[in-house]
Image (tube, rainbow, N blue to C red; front, side, top):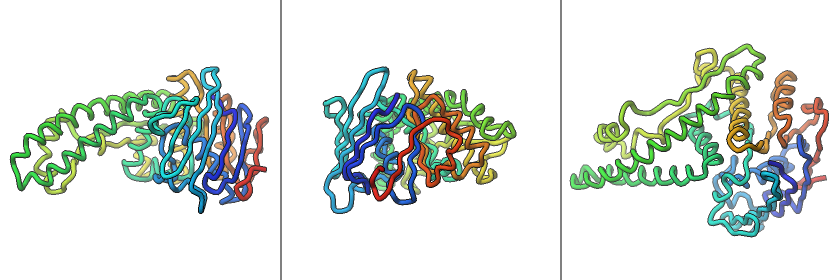
Length: 353
């Protein structure tokens, strides 16, 4: 998979810009707040996933502008494709001249992996961040998973409404039975997808982390369930407690992932350097999973991460992504000075020089 051409107009602080990247490493240089990350975000949106920076589409609009347009030409399975995202109050997407029903319709058509400073939260923050990583990664490989997850969350929302009213009307138990059966059915499928993805990730993650840590540490990964035994039975047993809180306390929406370094949980006891290395390893392993399952390399997007790494880790990252098209932002191109070949773009005041 390869980006052939990217055009942006009115997207965040970018004016009318166009880039034609090279096949491998593309370095995007510039001072802070000039628009470097905006270029990566524009590429990322074509995966069909939400932005890694905001949940509101209106944030993409340039100040005082009512519309933004992004156009992408890319190569997939040897075929040239065109896609366009027009943004007003929401995203409207066209793929090869065909209008898609939603932005999520691009899932599986264009694959990319993004690492930005916010991804340190993958290790440091709570379970919701790790679940979101899993759901986004799985959605790229299996677009039907997005619908499955949406149906599950809708059923959980319906159960939450019923349990809040149940103490006033016990006849609602029939509705609870219906919603819990749906939740258990969808939830089982979701955890099967997630466990399968963790197994795929574990084919690459330990080796990648071994390379980043120069063989000094061992990383293991495990999916953590929020309940034991049969899910439907566990839901019924949790009813009484859930009535007090008004929320469904167990299920895939409460599960987690545990990353351990040499047998010790990284979130609680890892240093900042270790957490950064784990997060980087996860993203690089994610790229390998996509390559294995689609037969194509995803686009690698690295936002301002090289300056935080020592020279050994910088060299490992640059060498590991060799053979994949990558876009790397930096304030100082000295952090990628060991690149043998590539293309450099300078971004200043929303323009590409």
